Length: 121
Length: 109
Image 1: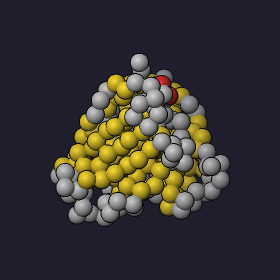
Image 2: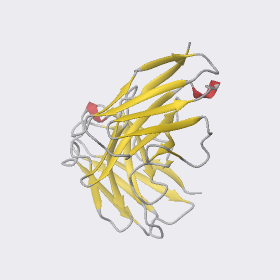
Image 3: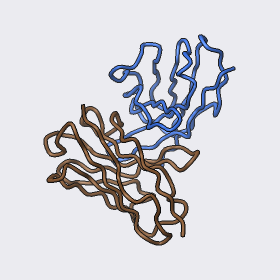
């Protein structure tokens, strides 16, 4: 059973870059035909898809965030990462990493527990 | 951009009764719709995908139906653990896009 775990700073200053890593266990990122994704949820609000990366490295992003977001994969560490530049208080959220269960990348059957990132000076 | 609208925002139902949750798309999404359940402090859990297929391990009391712009999640007999928040999510492969609804909270009546 694949498991995902987010890690990274819980506090980021405005205008700086938010960086998070998702470590995958129970399976290799490079062995399956899957998409690996980031989703966020501001406190008390709904869910927002940030973007996804294929195991081969191709990416696609939410158009509303595309100019500030980079997702990358490190198969040697079995991790994938998220960077969001020029953050503001609006980027304060619980950030989840996730994977589709079937390879389509369309929906999310495996989730990390989430990590809260607060943007504040 | 396709907008997903869930209704009602809050649904009050008695334990053991049926709950019917609605999700509407601003334009057709075919059957490319998923439903999730989220308990407080937890990550969402996939319930339904492709509008009507239950995910692995999901009880039969959860069912989904719909296509195009109108979708429904039905919980046939509410258990205590079902009184939480539910989200719909549409997906498309070209252009690649995933959009969530704003959620419906199911509360005890």
